Length: 250
Length: 199
Image 1 (cartoon, rainbow over the protein chains, first blue to last red):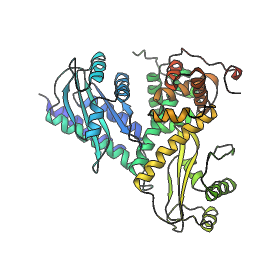
Image 2 (cartoon, rainbow over the protein chains, first blue to last red):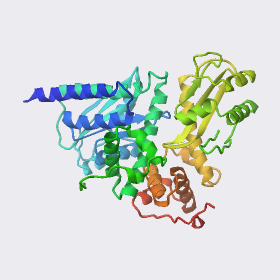
Image 3 (cartoon, rainbow over the protein chains, first blue to last red):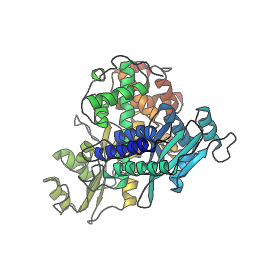
Image 4 (cartoon, chains in turn orange, purple):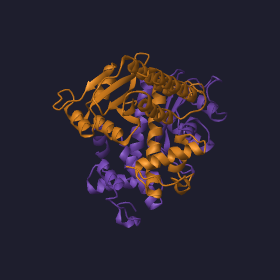
C-alpha cells in the first residue's frame, strides 16, 4: 500500500491549482487541468466538470477525455444521471456501480456501460448553500473510492468552485452568475476555435483542442484569449503550432 | 443595442424614449456602459451614477443624469467570440439589481443573441420562441460547426452561425442536426451564396 505517493500527489495538485489562482488565470484551463489531475491522483479513469448557467441548465465545461465529454453531453440531453442528481440534490453520489437494467438512470446507465464505464461518482460544487455544478468521476472498473479519495475529490471540487468565484474577483465585485456566465461563454469560444483549427489543420476536434492548449502554453497565452483571437480572426488558424512530430491519436 | 467594430449599429428593440436616448447618446459619444460591456464582454453595473466609485463616463454620465437616469446596467450580448451588442437596463432611482434580476438579464442577453442570429437568418415568425421554449442553448456542436464553416468559406464565425441557422430553417431540420453534418463533413456549403437563402 503506497499511500504516501498518492497523498503527495494530491497535495502537489492542490498546491499547483492554488498557485494557478494567484494571478490572472483562465477558468476553463484551470478546470481542464483539474479534470486531468483527478484522473492522475484519484482512482478514476475519466473526470469532468459541469456548471449551471443562469437559466439553471447544466453544461459541460471540462472533460479529461472525449468519451467522458460525449457521455456527459448525453446525460444532459437525456436529463438523467449521477451528475444531474448530485447537482440537483447537492449531495454526493459515491461508488455507484452501474448494472444492466438500472432503474434509477436506465438510459444513462446503458450508454455508460456501452462506453465501458462501470462505476460513477459525482460531487456537487457548492458555495454558500448553492450548488453551482458537479465534478464527475467515472471508472472503467467496478470498485470503490476510499474515504481518503472522497475527501481529496471533494477538496478538488472545492478548488474548482473557488476558481470560478475568484476569477477577476479582485477587479470588480462580480456575482456568481456573472462568473458562471463568463466560464460558459469561454467554453463556447473554445468550441468555435476548435472548429476553425480542426478545419485548417485537418485534424479532429480533440486534436484541435490539444493544439490550442499546446499553443497557449508555448506562447504564454490564456487558453480562452488564444481561442478568442483564433475565432475572431485576429490570429490566423494556420499560425497555430502544429504537432511535431505528428502524433497519431485515437 | 447592437454594436460592431466597424461602427455600424442598430437597435434591436427598446422600451421607451429614455432607452432610445441611452443608445443614441452612446453611439454619438463612443462611450458609455453598453460600449464597455460590448468591448469587455462583461456585465457593467453602475448602481449609482452620482457615485465616483462606479465606472464613469465623463460626457455620458451628466447627460444621463439630466434624463433622470440614476442607475444603469449593461450586459454583453454575445455567442462565444461573436460580439453582437449589449442589453441595457436603467433605473430612475439608485440601487443595485437583485441577484434574480441580474440572473434574468443574463438569460435575456442569451435570448437576444439568438434572436439576432435568427433574424439575420430570416427566421419565420415564432420559430425562435418555439425553439427557446423547447429548451437548451445551442449545443457545442453548433459552435464547432460555426468554426469549421467559417474556415471553409473564409467568413466570420458570426456569418457562419447565421448560415447554419438559415440552412436549418430552409431544410426544416434542427440546428443541431445541420451542425452535426457539418462537423462530420457530410454537409458541404457552397461558397456561392446564390444557392442559399441569403442574398
